Image 1 (tube, rainbow, N blue to C red):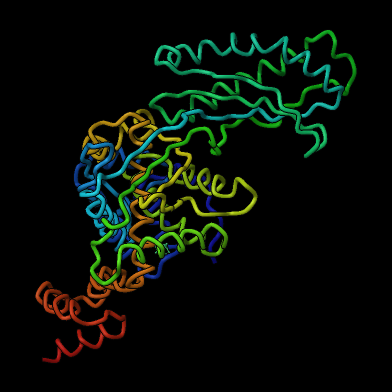
Image 2: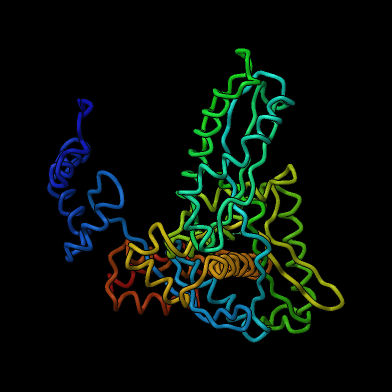
Length: 439
Ligand code: MEV
């Protein structure tokens, strides 16, 4: 029987590995070998990774791939993507190439405002609270100067603090709804530090406010935290071309292709079951670049999905139209990203990814990431409405199956060639592999 452990974090890395291997795995030695095999031989680099989180026992690798030929606002990018799903980088590259000769991607940042809130309770008269808030607003800003000075020097800072009455949704509930500009930083630490300072000031000033005399007029701070919902930190990316130029695929007429694309997007607009998968395909591109550039993909996911449901039902993040003979395909999403701070200056591969992207500002990165999402969606929907998705997926999956089977390089070459002309299925690959081995 396994009993709880006290002080796990205080054990050395070797002790932690031994403990987990002995308690939770069947082959202690094999577990130790697997975990240590993934350690970096460069001890300094390994120490860096060890210290990213608590209780590190090894490194978890994902492939880092490159999707080249992305023309974005007339500049050519090769986009680094960290992802395990076999078809994603191939699909992105294909979409990049498709649009390369058609003017490429055009992008615009529509806003960069970040949000944070101090959530608090107050039972008294709301008008009295408003008068109190108007009085303390300059004090809130003054008290946080030591935190905001540097950000202000970089052109950012606190944009506004608003008192929001949420008592219709929850009894006695109010917020300081705060907006920020954090320039090239994602800004989570900056925002949270400011919010905690606002909360302290709010509490102190409420305690000393002479017009708050009754018990109901107490301010009780519940929590202070940034919001990952950033509907005013928005980027738009689009591609467009005359319908007749959509002629890359000789098996389908350009007009029919354009109409099928629009119909597929319209289905995702009205049908949440489809919208979720449609948007998942978009996130394949977005997460991969967000991860490669050291940003927080959970924050990005949460914010984007909330945005997809902003009008009350979950819908497509992309849009498509034909107007005066021009096919247009676009995306508009919130993206709170950073190119300084966090992992960006620490993780050598993140630094390199940002260098490959020509050292982007946060605004540049918003545009690149939005393009990756749009390209991924274009590639997926294109396959779905033409060949079906499995053709491409299984081609890419072939290598995974062959690796699982332990195929040698020669065997892989033979079987990849064979499946250029034959449909890839899991059982088909196994049977061809066995045939080859017998021979
Ligand atoms: C698979 O990872 C993504 C797709 O399902 C996206 C889509 O259906 O649009 C292919």
